[in-house]
Amino acid sequence: MKKSFIIVFLIIVFSLFYFDSVLAQTVSLSPTSQNVARSTNFSLTINISSVTNLFGVAFDLNFNPSLIDYVSATEGTFLSSGCQTSLMTAENPAGKLVFGITRLGASCGGVSGSGILAILNFRSLIQDGSNILSFSNNSLCLLNGLVCNYVVGTWNGAAVTVMTVVDTTPPAAPTGVVVG
Image (tube, rainbow, N blue to C red; front, top):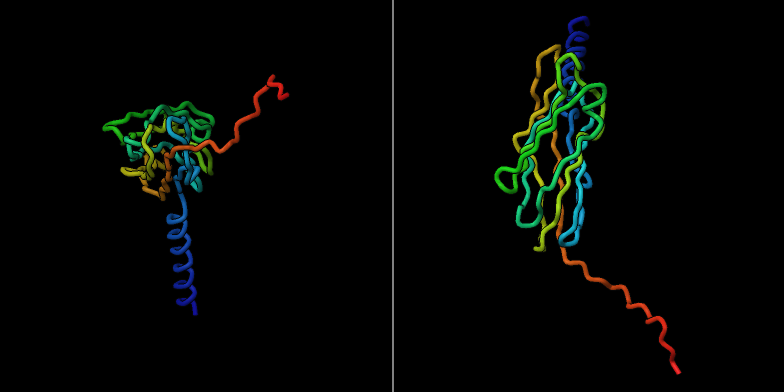
């Protein structure tokens, strides 16, 4: 009886760690899908959820540079709570945004929970088309004492469709015209 209890206990403990690591640390873009008019500014929010002791994030964001152009990034408040941060972005080559954000100083520790890492600002170009934004070279630094444990986590991209917007608003009646 004691042996079966130990085996069941070990299976439960293993399952908790396994499912915790599978379900934890999700990075996603929102909205997950949007339509934008040609030559329009729009934003995508980088969210993180179910993370423990996050110290830094690095990834490449891939997109179609003939449809959209990267403009800028603004830090979210999640990683900067209680500590200074450093944000780095570079588009190299066109259509690949290299992104990194980290807390400054291991004494700050990591942050846990869910929140906004950053907001990415783009501009649609003059060509219609669908664009899938996808992540590559993903890495999350989870602090364990003063050491980074690098994990991949789950990463969810987004779809942006650039399209010509047709104005269907009827014209307004002219003002000051007297019909007689």
